[in-house]
Image 1 (cartoon, rainbow, N blue to C red):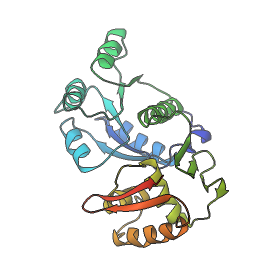
Image 2 (cartoon, rainbow, N blue to C red):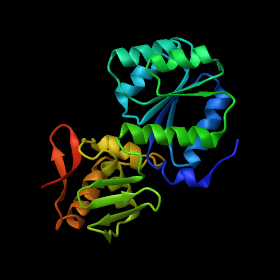
Image 3 (cartoon, helix red, strand yellow):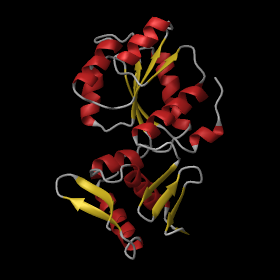
Image 4 (cartoon, one colour):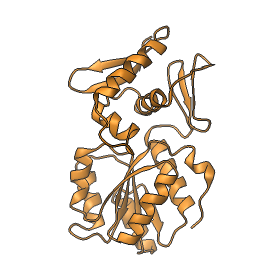
Length: 235
């Protein structure tokens, strides 16, 4: 299963939930997608999907249809009945027209049959998340603040914005959810997923530094009591 280096440029900080009961396949997928910049959490029982979605905010769900506990079709129906609009990519060995049609009619956003090429899975995930965010262009913006996912560079009023790696990671997490609050814990999970014992108070320091860098612009990082931080642009 080949990999494409270019795909990794746009995958950074996308958090994916993988629901797959084939342990060898799931373990490989978690490692392979992580190498391309995705953050992947794995469950092997359909009953764990809703519990995971309540605990963590994900950008997409990779859902196997043949799950134990609660089958993929039932998981999908449960999500859509609850008006959960998370993008869902069906990953299954059941490759038939009837299966594809029924999955899409039940609310799946895409369908990929096993065996598959990793680069196609990555491309489909990125396309799903972009569509869910309302844009197919790999550029995120909040007023004059822009982030180019291909070059991994921030610009403010068309001028390059110099940031430390951690400042860059926090601002990237915020601009990917521009207008939506992220708690300190959610930012820690996105920014420091590979580090142990990172205290959420570190985020306060980084947000303070970012506010200084954005001080002369209409872009603001606002604190919403009980909800977290939100990136906004004043008129």
